[in-house]
Structure formats: C-alpha cells, structure tokens
Image 1 (tube, helix red, strand yellow):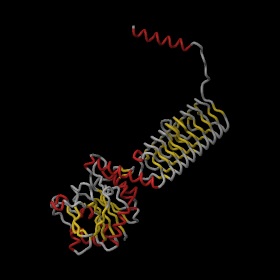
Image 2 (cartoon, one colour):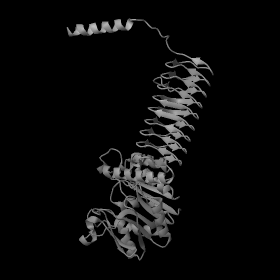
Image 3 (cartoon, one colour):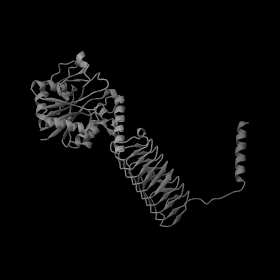
Image 4 (cartoon, helix red, strand yellow):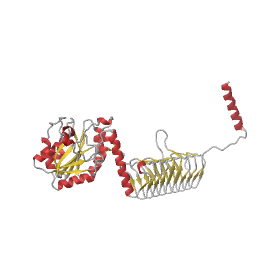
Amino acid sequence: MTELLSIILAAGEGTRMRSTTPKVLHAVGGLSVIGHVLRTSKTMQGQIAVVVGPNHEAVENTVAAIAPTATIARQVERLGTGHAVRQAKAAYEAAAGNVIVLYADTPLVTAATMGEIVRRLDGGADIVVVGFRPNDPTGYGRLLTEGDRVRAIREHRDASEAERLIDLCNSGIMGFRADALRSVIDRIGNSNAKGEYYLTDAVELAQGDGKRVDYVVADADEVIGVDDRTKLSIAEATFQDLRRADFMKAGVTLKDPKSVWFSYDTEIASDVTIEPNVVFGPGVVIEQGAVIHAFSHIEGAHIGRKASVGPFARLRPEADLGEDVKVGNFVEVKKAKIGRGAKISHLSYIGDATIGAEVNIGAGVITVNYDGYNKYQTIIGDNAFIGSNSSLVAPVTIGDGALVASGSVITEDVEADALALGRARQAVKPGRAKEIFAKAAAKKQSKKG
C-alpha cells in the first residue's frame, strides 16, 4: 500500500522525432526526458509505475537505472491514454491515497505542481486536472469549467466551435484519489473521432458519480510535451533559462548567461564566475570562488576553491582540481587529480595522473598514458617542475622537487630533487643550413626544367 503512486506513460513511439531512439530517451540538459520525470516523481516519496511500449528495452533499462524500485507495465496496443493507464492496474489496484498520471515526454513538470495536486486531493477533490494557457490552443483539449471546478475535458477534434474558443487547455497530467480512479477507469469508452480510450473522459464519469473535480493552472513552459525536434529544442532552452536563473540567485556570476549551458546535475557554489560560451556536461561540481574562463568544456569534473580553468580548456570525466589550481588555455585533463596550487598553463594533456601540490607543468607537456591497449599512471610529486614540450611515458613517477628539462622524453622514474634530461645533445654545424637549402632549391629547379 502506498500514499502516492505516480503512473508515468511512456509507450509512445515518437514518430515525429524521426529517430531510431525512443522519444523519451532524447536528452534535455544531459538527461533523458523520462529521466527528468522520474527524478521529479522520486522527490514525492511514493511508488512509481511506468507504462512502456513493446520492444522498448532501452526505456526499461533507463527506468531501472534511475528508479530501481519502479514497476514496469507494457502497453502492447496503443489505444489511448485511458488504455495506457489500465496497463498499470496491478499498481493502482493496490494503491491507497493518491495517484498522479504523468507523461514521460514532459520533462519540465515540477515537484511544486505535483505537490499542489496532492494538496487539492487531500483537501477533498476526487480528481485534479492540470491546465495551462498556451499562446495558440489549437490541437489541445479544452477544460470546460464552472467556477473552480471542471465539468468536462473536450479533445480539440471533438470540440464545438464555441468550445474551441476556450484558452484553458489540458496538459494531460491528472491526479486522482486512488478509489476515484478505480471507480472510473474501466468505464471509459472509445466513442470518439479516433476510437481511443481517453483518460480525460474520467472527468465526466466522475461528475456523473457526484465527485469533485478541481483544476490547477501550470505555466505553459512547464508542461510542454516533447514530441518533435522543435519542442525538444524549446524544452532545452527553457531548462537552461531555469538553471541560469537558479544559479544567479544562488550567487553565481554568469557574464553572458545565454551562452552558458548547464547539465541537469551541475553543482556550483557561490562566488563562482563563469565567462561566456562554457558548456557543462553531466557530473560537474565547482567549489566557491573558482573562475571558469570562456570557451571551456567541462564534464564529470570536480573544480576546487579559487581554481582557474580556461579559456579553451577541456576537463573530462574524473578530472579533480584542487584549491588554487590553474588549468589554462588549450589544456585537456582526464582522470587526473591535480594538487593544490599546481599550474598547467597551456597546450598540455594530463591523463591518468596524480599531480602534487605546487607543481608547474610547462607548455606542451603530455602524459603518454596509452600503449594502444592499456592505460598507465603518471605520478608527479609536490613542487616538481616539468619543462615545456616534455613527454612523460607512463608508468612513471617524478619525485618531489624534481626538475624535468624542457624537451625531455622521460621513460624511467625520477627521484626527489633530481634533474632529469631525456634528449639528444645539441650539435651545431656552421654553414650546413645554407648547403641544405641550396641543394633543395636546385632539386626544385630541376623539376621545373
């Protein structure tokens, strides 16, 4: 028995997406649209049932990863929303309290709206319908209301001309007292233009039973359904605007908010500054006072207090930057822990590495971590200095305070405080360059002849 059951309808094919990927697996803010609905539903502390279509194993796997306790029901024939809800009968037959029916392609629905539905149900409503007012209501079902009650929902194709003038539309999201849902769901018929079983017909059935049907009004952006690429882009833009506003309210400076793109799980402390054209993939945490310079791409990374990243830097998964670290322009870091105060200022690749505190990495340094089959570790101790254009061939350890001369290829461990040189001795041959150039010029001239 449960106090709240969320039934998420996810059986649609999404043919208008023109994609081999089910529409509910397309991403907004780095997370599938169904993932957003699942995460919001989980905040309500209830049970979740998801209705999927046949051969949608990828959807089922996504549900299992995000909401492991959710139950799965399958809608083999797609005969409308009422029919889809019936597939979750095992869940709603056992439910006590309230049931909310959601759609897997509405990623921006909020816990606040779900909470308002529950509040109305707990306050005496038997059914609660979520309405919205779009700029253009064409194609949407209309809420036919009397005062603050709903007497019917009319699908656009079945609506009269007068009913089509109504601007309050049906989002599809509905809340039920569990016993009210059970009392109407099996009585929904399919006498309509499409011959489908509409969940919205539950309203008139409940009215006939003398039950109370309320409605709440959500923002049109919140209930947008992602059923084509255009709406996917609109949902993404709305999501990004919301994230930007939230971060700025929390004390993050965005120099050009519209050009910064966040992921669903980005975490940023106060007094962080982010310059234009920065993209965050999933799994980023930024601590207080850090600065992210322009044109940087960051994913799966931790950035410590007062660190400086970019411009034109790339942090890949498991990059872990300590306090006061500097990662400069055209530097790539992957699966590496960078100690406090270390500097990697420009044109370097650091991967599969542990870098100590106050280390200086010169321009053009790379950790050679891959032999074509396996990855290996590079370890650099505190206060070491790695000269420009050096290659550290892993596995290799550079001791505390060691100095690697510029242009070196290091293949063996370097002890603490040692100087390591791994390059050929310079030789200078006077006049030889002139001879080489003359020979090359003569060869070119002979080809012309």
